[in-house]
Amino acid sequence: MSSAASHAPAAPPFGRLTTAMITPFRPDGALDLAAAQKVATHLVDQGNDALVINGTTGESPTTSDAEKVQLLKAVLEAVGDRAKVVAGVGTNDTAHTIECAKAAAAAGVHGLLVVTPYYNKPPQDGLKAHFTAVADSTELPVMLYDIPGRAGVPIKTETLLALADHPRIIAVKDAKGDLAATTKVLANSGLVYYCGADELNLASLAIGAVGIVSVVAHVASPQYRQLIDAVLAGDLATAQRIDRQLVPAVEAIMTRTQGAIMVKAALKLAGVIEHATMRLPLIEATAGQVDWLTTDLKTAGLIA
Image (tube, rainbow, N blue to C red; front, side, top):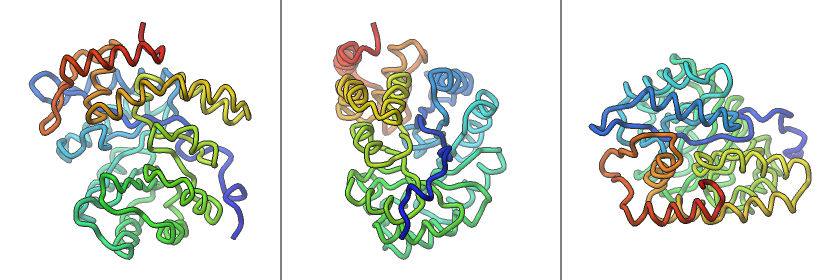
């Protein structure tokens, strides 16, 4: 087959720097649409080309379908003229996922993020049928989300190559952590890749990912923009320096406890949001966790 380089568009379909955005809540747990618009505006001002709304970092398991549409409309109103808004619509029920996809399309989003169905562990043929049905349900471009650590099953290389033939399945958010498998897909399809694991951003870009879908970028967007630009310019030394500088932040946000918990705490420390409220079963960061986070963000040069 021809190489990915011959297929890859000059302008990546979802830009290069994307943040999987949190969903702010008020202290009583209600949706805070004004805060969501503030976060979205902040992220785009900081260099994001796109935002994923209603992903796992957006606590999608605990927001209703109606709230998801409200969030999409609020973010589109705030930044839809300056950035792509990608809706997380994946569930472990194909019919429900299609409903979510159609609702997101009606709201006016620019693309769909569709995660591997989780918990029920479908076989690969089931994954192909699921993703195909969702991609057939709207005219929007689709980014598959391959995250076996949460879903319980990977999207295998052969499945990805088969799905690449669908005209609207154009990208993969890759959180599988198998760089060899990613390289094989890149070498044998036109799928474009976005790194979905912040600890592998530089490595993924080095093997041909066009961009990242980041959690840590909530507080490190300028740094990740510089890292991406350095890779594109062939300046490996600068990219390595930035990547290593951000190690404490990646560890603090992604390994101390659940990522959405820590990134909300980080945004509160940075003064972007007023409340770090979570919805159960997620809980706010403890005082000790916030102390560790503060130290690590200072070490990474992200807060004063």
